[in-house]
Length: 118
Image (tube, rainbow, N blue to C red; front, side, top):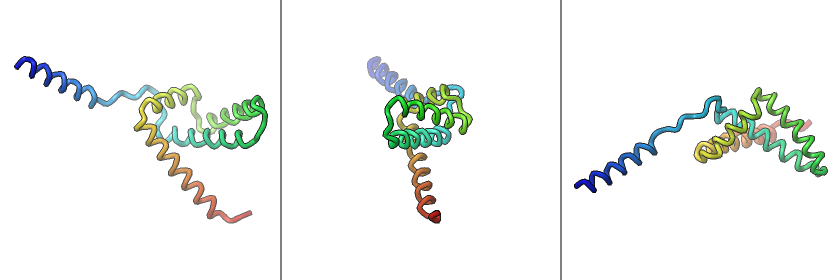
C-alpha cells in the first residue's frame, strides 16, 4: 500500500510540476513584436546575401541596416537576443511567431502583387 501511495504521489507531483506555467522573463518582447522584427531581419539577410559582395563588405552593410531595424522598431538589441533565446527554448511559442511571420509575409506578397506597376 505504501508503494502504491508513493507511486501515486510521484505521478501527481510530476503532473502538477508540468502543468505550471513558466514565468516569462522580465521585459520579454511579445510574439507579435518578435515576429515583426524577425521578419525584417530575415528580409535583410536575404537582401544582403543577394548582393554577392565580399564577406567583410556584407558584414558592414548588414550591421548598418540591422541597427536601423532596432531603431525603427524602438527595441534594444540585447533584449531582442534575450527574447529570441527564450522563444528558441520554447518551440511551441516560437512556432506561433513563425506562423505570424508567414501570415504577414503572405499578406505583404498579395498586396504587392495587386499594386499597380509603376
